[in-house]
Length: 299
Image 1 (cartoon, rainbow, N blue to C red):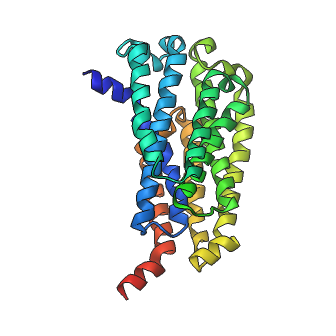
Image 2 (cartoon, rainbow, N blue to C red):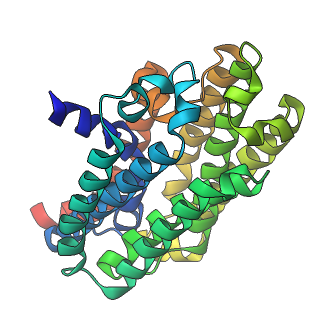
Image 3 (cartoon, rainbow, N blue to C red):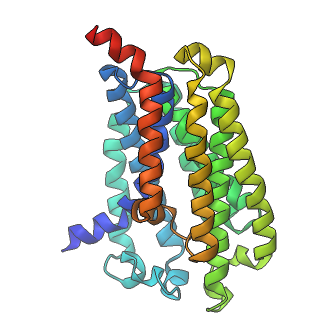
């Protein structure tokens, strides 16, 4: 059915990345506030629509290259299941619900989403071919999700949270490049991203070492920062750090030993160890942050 092909064009699996929008409300201790949670969910939907429109634009721009790619040739546009005209019309129609949602959210959030969209369009046509800058643009996209989530509910986010997001998203982007390099060893590199010609495994491994270290240190410092302690009235959030360290190390293991990493959303949804550690981190974080509020409700 055509509708299924159009849905596939949206890349719904990639919407997992937009969950970063919920980071501010979680760490602001407002996850139980239904009014703010509703606004946060609207922000999530807005980012899902914006990112899907970007994916459609990207698929149109890369249609010929995708046809020569081992996996991407099965995408709706590259395979011919959806025409370029149909994709353009579909993307235009997606703007209607996006604008409708933005009308109910703060103007600051609209600006953030607009910057995200414009930046990614530039990334599609030019910036993804610029070495190092390409992974930084991906990182900025994640940071804008966090900033957008905060803007949607009107909370101030910690600088340490922003730094953690930057390093974590750099880690994911660099890991993706390493996985692509591994694949390019078995295929002609011209069929891959052109920017891969400027990377090699030793270089990306050095960058990833910095990204992993930065993520762990910034997160640990956030958990004991003055803002976090004053917000949660405890410094116990530091005990969630081991989960973060294990998760990073597990991802590195899958990247280096299993040659995974090209698709981060598949790793975090299929690797049992990562699923368990993310669940435990979420559970412990929620218990530490919200235990006082839950006790106040019932007692």
